[in-house]
Length: 109
Image 1 (tube, helix red, strand yellow):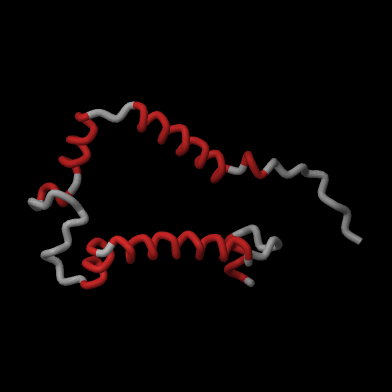
Image 2 (tube, rainbow, N blue to C red):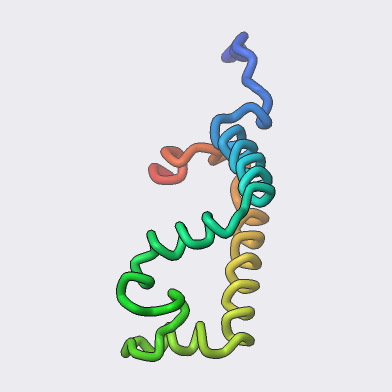
């Protein structure tokens, strides 16, 4: 019978992706507190839609893509897509196999 490994696995709170997530939350709070008119103008200037003469990336009237027109033109459809996406993530999380914690394990299974 195999002996259990003497290595102690770190807490899930200390995994690298979780630490990155913590930094993202902190940076979001800092960015929210430091928002300014300069930042809004800088965002518009660096946006490629601004350079093409559009006032927003949501301005899709000139495009031929019917799905983008539906998504940005009808708020109930946009809300449905956003909620459905989150529900899908929750369902996938609930059905996830606890044994396959690695991407490599998932790909080779």
